[in-house]
Length: 299
Image 1 (cartoon, rainbow, N blue to C red):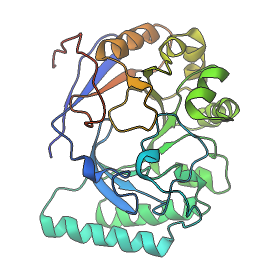
Image 2 (cartoon, helix red, strand yellow):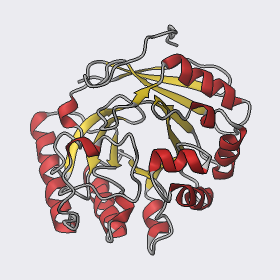
Image 3 (cartoon, rainbow, N blue to C red):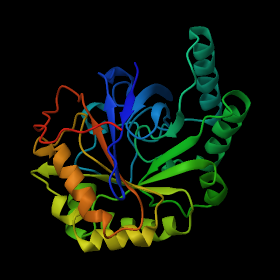
C-alpha cells in the first residue's frame, strides 16, 4: 500500500494527510502476538516497521480511554516479555522477507506495540539489539519511540534514548481532571514528571490525541495551560491527531479536520514549536468520521 502525505502550510502550522485505504490487519492490535509487525502506514513516519516487546498481552502504566489495544488484547499473561534472542530472531526473519519480496526498506523502525515499551526491564538492551541490527542491515532507517514518558529516568536510559530520531511523548491535556479522565489514575503526576524529563532531551515531540463526545479535551488543548506545558517540554514538534482505529469506549468520537486546524491555529501564537495536524482520509470501519468542513489544498 502506498501512503501519500499532503501538507497545508500556514504560520507555524502544517497538515499531513495520509491517503489510501490502510490494510488494518498489519497493526499490532490486529495480531498482538507478533514481535515485529507491519510496516503500517503511519501518519507521522510513513512506512513504519513496528517492534513489540509484549507479544503476550498489553503492559502499560497508563489506561487510556481511547486505547486500541483493549479491543483485541488478552492481558492475562502479563509477565511474558520478549527476550533479546526472540527479538533478534524475528528481526532476521523480517529482513529475509524484505529481501525475498524485493520491497524497499521501511521509513522507520518504531518502538510501540502492546503498551509502554520503556516498561520492559531490558529496554536498554533491546534498543541496543535493534540498533545493531539496523546499523548492519538498514543503515539509513531511523529508530523512533512512542511513550508516555513516565519511565525515562530508568537506569541505562540516556544512551538508549539517544538512539531515537524522535521520542513521541503523549500529552493529552494539561489539567488533572482531563489527564486522569483520558489516561487513567496517576496520569497527572506522571505526565508532569515526564514533561520535566523530556525537557532534558533533544529529540522529543509532543503527541496529542484530540477527542470529543463522552470525553472532550478540545477546550483543555486550546488553553494557555496546555501551551505552557508544551513550552516547558520544549519539543521539536507538536502533533495533533484524532481517532482512526477501534476503541472500546463507545462514547469517544473523533473530532473534525476543521477542529484540529482551529486548535493548531490557536496554539500557534502561544507555543514555540511547529504544530503538525495529522489526518487520515480512510478510517477503520468501526469509526464514524465527522463530516469534512474544510477542503485542504495540497502544496
